[in-house]
Image (tube, rainbow, N blue to C red):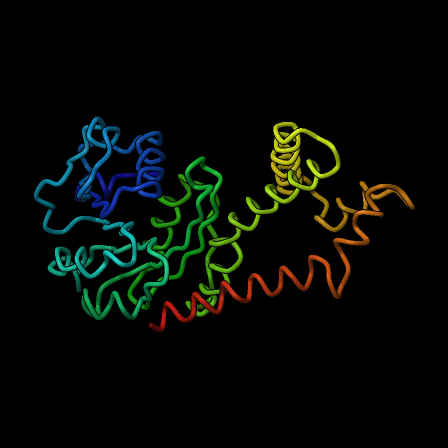
Length: 271
């Protein structure tokens, strides 16, 4: 990607925890000049302070992009610093969960170009997926720029409406925790069948990671991949008959799980 506009005007990273650090590392790896980045964070890590970026220094008056990566509960304290940059051509990109475009417009000004993004924690290892949606003042060129920035930590998808963000939160935002719990329970089930805890956990981690990588790389659908490994009347079929039970298996459980997370996301956004 081209960092020309950022090199000329600068990029402000508001908050540099795990997500902010993952993005900054990705940008620097892709050739963004450290001198064009301003980081504002009350507790910058040793890694951040060693990268030659501007840490807690006076911000440029009209940077190309402000990327907001603070926790939602810190937003009220953090954003007033940036209000002077609103209603101009500075693009604001937020990865803070549950903070709506309308909320940002109320704080920064109704004419401010704003893009809301929902990444997930595998971004820390470059395997994230981020959904983005812009307000009426975010141009197609600015959406392209935001996508290129977020592409540094994984895949990027564009939404048709902001209302879809709650479902994205329920699926991919919260989803890694569901998978981590599946690893826990798969390992515990192996242990219950006579494996050592260490071996069961190693098998469970590698199996889930490997299956995920195969699902992403294969041309076939996950449904077809499942069929491919299911021999008639074999061991996999015996297990799947329990897991795929429409009344008590994974389908109703996963539907209820994603609905609960989506509903909570709606509550937080409207609160």
